Length: 303
Image 1 (cartoon, one colour):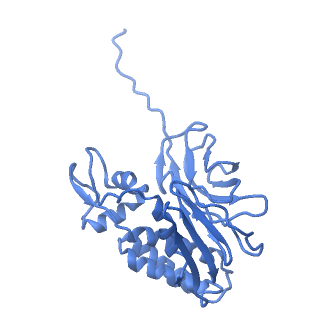
Image 2: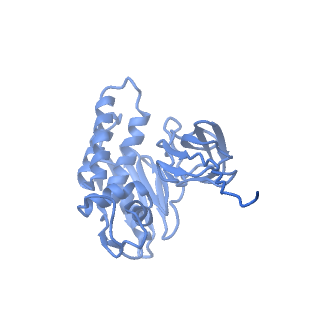
């Protein structure tokens, strides 16, 4: 079996863990905004752009009880293509030929994704990946074997590493390596050592809070940053920038922040182990609002 890009395997590898078809629509609950519906149904408030496009909505106000159409399986493939393209562009040398064009195509792909044009987004993202991939001309060849008990074996034969994801954990499989996937479990470790010249850790994918979240002034431990776990990572390094900057190292895919002064903050996270660190994740932002205390003094009857 062969494929031009490693992204196709993401869907194949995750399939055995799916027990039933995902829902095709979501019903708006009383008091919910479109962003709240997107967060509940798709895991990210920013996905409201997609719901608006999919359902031909003029704005973000939707009446309770309205049934909204949800994205189909093309969305997952587009997400994988975007992740592969972002990593490729991030890792490309700033002076590398075609990097600027690749960044432009990636931007186009992200706009198409927000418009729920998933197949077009995946195609544009694949084009960006090919422009900066050192061996994009060499087809990626891999084999997938599904046993009767549901176990799946994936073997990469040549070309670019194949990205395998299951149960929210992703791992790269390089040429000559094999991984096995069992229902309800993340991928096993590759059967042979990853070439030392290539990164084995993917950049983490931030989860909470949604990008652009506005928060009331918080106490220590109140705000917790979360991201998807990365296969092979033994720790994570969070970089927080803003009125109060900080570097946090944790051993789980989450980090509780210290007390923060009002202002705008940005954060990234890297996966790490004993030998390397991944590239930083996509930058996310949030704002801590200044909660000024208002004193209301009424008239007194005392004379």
